[in-house]
Image (cartoon, rainbow, N blue to C red; front, side, top):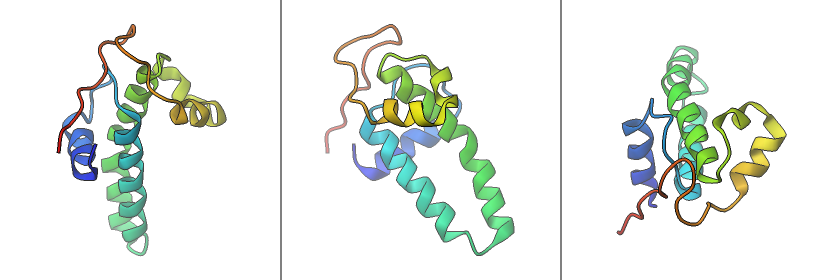
Length: 106
């Protein structure tokens, strides 16, 4: 999934905690969040506003990513374990959280 589509997906599904998110789109979202935070780090008010704006979409994306590897969203609360899970490949085919995210064709 291209970078722009991953960002659009993140904002479009900012409060969607159901379904699945592909590994590539999740990591594109993380890169976007880090870049925006770094760009606004010198401006405290702007940085705080960006942090608040990205908080809910980041949690939702993380939970959907956990669903993609057939784990419950609560695993996002355990720092070391969730990093290992977030690096895993997606579950092939449908799992208990639904069908895999549709592939995006460029």
